[in-house]
Amino acid sequence: MSTTTAGGAGAAPPADRRPPERTRKSVTGTRRLVAAVFLLPTLVLLGALVVYPIVYSVYRSFLDQAGTGFVGLDNYRALFTDATIRTAVKNNAIWIVLAPTVSTVLGLIFAVLTERIRWGTAFKLIVFMPMAISMLAAGIIFRLVYDQAPERGVANAVWVGVHDTFAESSGFPKAHPLPVHPLTAGGGGSFVTKAPVRTGHPVLLPLVGVAPAKMPGDARPAKTPAAEPGKITGTAWLDFTKGGGGRPNVVDARELGLKGIKVEAVKDGRVVASATAGADGTFTLPASADGARLRLPAANFEEAYNGVDWLGPSLVTPAIIGSYVWMWAGFAMVLIAAGLAGLPRELLEAARVDGANEWQVFRRITVPLLAPVLAVVLVTLMINVLKVFDLVFIIAPGSSQDDANVLALQLYRSSFGTDADLGIGSAIAVLLLLLVIPVMLFNVRRIRKEGRR
Image (cartoon, rainbow, N blue to C red; front, side):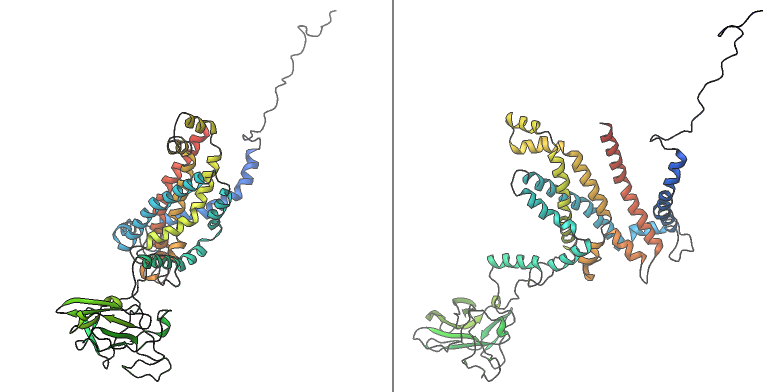
């Protein structure tokens, strides 16, 4: 009788001890079913708020205004045949080229120049502050900044101030004589005396049409001219007494002299003498003016320079782009400054030791090393510019809104209102999407490339 030993030939085969199959998990260790349950609400919202509107907009762009008839590519054809929409496309191209480029360049300049100064942080804070303002508020601010009236619009106030510093402006743009006055129209906006003047006989040159409040601040009460032998004396004054009671062609006590008005003596078509009235309106001409007619040239009565029509058809788009740059240059500056802080300083110092000047260091080392950051800023601003609406809608007045039109504004105008055409509006929305996609693909490709490094 034999017995079997452990591990002998008669031993039972070992049981299958393979571990049971595990439920497959995701990379993060979470069961895929659980992950799908948590992602489902987000996917539903994404589909309802993003995917469905895109698909429906594409579908609606092939229908007519009523949404009942199929029109094919007619709505897309209208984008390039309608003059208003063509203007919007052209302005969008201008925006894409100018706004991101100028904002990025200014941000780069600000970031580099403020890196070595003590108050650089305070300066960056001031430049970045407009980012805290909404587009609506910025539009209202710049609508006032670009106001045509210099007393309200800051831009024109500065422009007129600079202009008047180098060019003399007229002080009496609406002054004119009355029929009872010894002056008559001389052509070209000037006024001349009805009769020649003689030496030793004072001349009176009264005018009206100037509000007392618009008179020069240092004008003094007019003075009756005194006769001088061998000379022609006279007075140019405002023949108007505030509150009434004055007499025409008579210098009354409360009437002011037209300080600074120019008087010319014209004989045989030539100017033989000229003078400028003093604070009390008096002037004196030499004996060579005897027998001439006195002329008040048109330069005395030209309308005052009123500045630039910033919101006119020719300048409205650059003006609005200026307001956008004011807001977003700070954004570009902050991102570029962050990239600048991470540059390897040893490379910059090595270049300086090798004899490179600051411009060479900036152009050949700093800018190439900042290229990824500059690309981020440019792409972000380009996507943002394609959606610009608020600034154009608020700043551009109704008279020049067609000239400042952009695709986002035209999308709003085509989709809402009494003459709304949702087919055209949907086509514009699809066009905007197609314009954004290449920029987004470039950004994704750049991010993946950076991730591989």
